[in-house]
Image 1 (cartoon, rainbow, N blue to C red):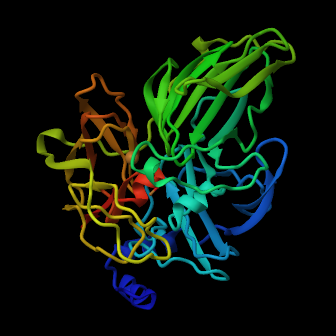
Image 2 (cartoon, rainbow, N blue to C red):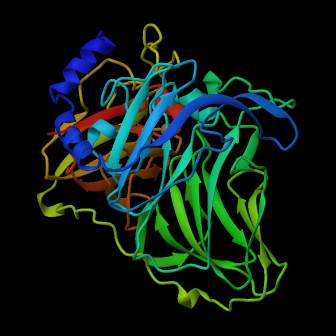
Length: 459
Ligand code: C2O
Ligand code: CU
């Protein structure tokens, strides 16, 4: 087993692309670091009782929404005041490997009382988020998910902007945390929360200018739940998915997205003051309201015709003719559970595997990548879901594009997470343009932590 000290020595030798990471670090050292202090707090999450043992960063209770400009130097010092180790992963950001926040693979985990300095420039504008990659089910489950918004000065103007962080909590009727997962559910869809919130409130109502054009950024940071979005009382266009603009905005029509995914909507608020727009999730047996928006003031008179596409992000277009194909199989496994616990890793079960190998990630072993990719070359990940469940499969460090699926037409946008359906086969194309070890895992965190994790090495 690799000790933490050996890891530190090893990474300095550039084993994980740390050399390039450090170069990136120097380039952005001008930014004044913001402090992100991880700690426990208490908060009202179900609307009535105070929940103890909530985890967040800074004063909270909701983690700070971080806003930067594309290509701007950003720096954050993680200060760990939790009673356990943690890290921060910047979900969807194509940044140097050393800043990726994955214990053992890209950095040591950060003990209580220690700090870690992150510094990078976000190359893509859009809606992203951040979360720990250590004891992830508990730390995310108890609150550690924050939005990371990258602005583009060339984005079209909106009259109003709102960001929603969607997630559930596993609480009893007195607002106390209950077990974060049930093993039998981890082996199926994952364990659902009991209290459903947007920005840590149950069905919050917010105000937006009447007749105004609102940019609504939605991030699913829940560990389990897949959403089907329906908006009533207003028309809306999808302008970006998973932090990447769609070339041609299209109407929001029961769009389904899974854990880790984001959507940016352009919403025209009703012209009449007091009219209410409702956002619901209809993927549950009993559809429920996520949040609502009330028109205020006199109408700004905007229409969907005022919506223009967002400028594209600088993601390299894969060369399909030259691409090598990597077959990937998601399956259930009956392999024995990993021996012994690790600090950031195992839940004590193996239910899932990628190419027959189960790994819970965030552990010192194994250090064998699924495959080694050549820097700058194009690849097609030919992914087959051999399970009866949907998996939001997520790749760190690089964006890919779905090009073909057995389930019919795919949305032609770059993404970091693809929601693969039961028995679906999909081809995901990418340019391996970011050196280092990049994790590839299901973002249903129980699936991730019970085997559906692997990593690619780009050299
Ligand atoms: Cu948001 Cu490794 O993931
Ligand atoms: Cu999964």
